[in-house]
Length: 217
Image (cartoon, rainbow, N blue to C red; front, side, top):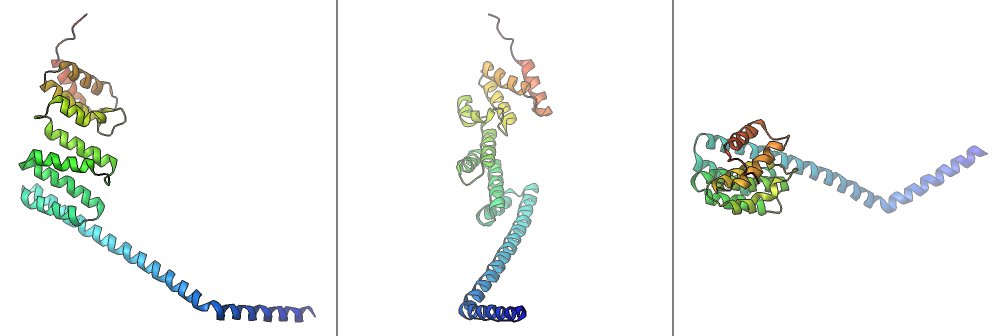
């Protein structure tokens, strides 16, 4: 008797499933097709992005080669093209390289390009800081110490990524301005930072040795 009930239950379940299929099969098939299309679209998107990145990488390497061959106008044009058309990572690298190429012929124009990157909120903070430092490197021989301090003074804190280079730039700028008190301050910060690179530390020590003695009170 139990076997009979089991067969009846099985028939009932089969009939219920058939009714559900008849009622909802179009939606089930449509959902399956949408999932397949979405997965295929995502795979296609990944393939295209990878292809674009590979093409941009090749073009970037060729532009670098032009620069190394001193074909700076051609390199600048190539980097400009990448800055306009490449995926975001290569686009930023290209913008930085454009500024570097422009600096060879027009440092002030290059400073403007670096300033634009530093002010671009779509750019990562670390890259903004790098652009600020690159601009300061171009200005250290021509800018006043107060102006340079206003530009990059915030990048001298113990956790700042480029603090070592920034401190050296400010020390040199203060030295040029005959502000030995400020120069000593930055050189001391370089000397007292355990993470200062050896080459930079050596340069700082050489400048420290040339500083006038501190007046005794």
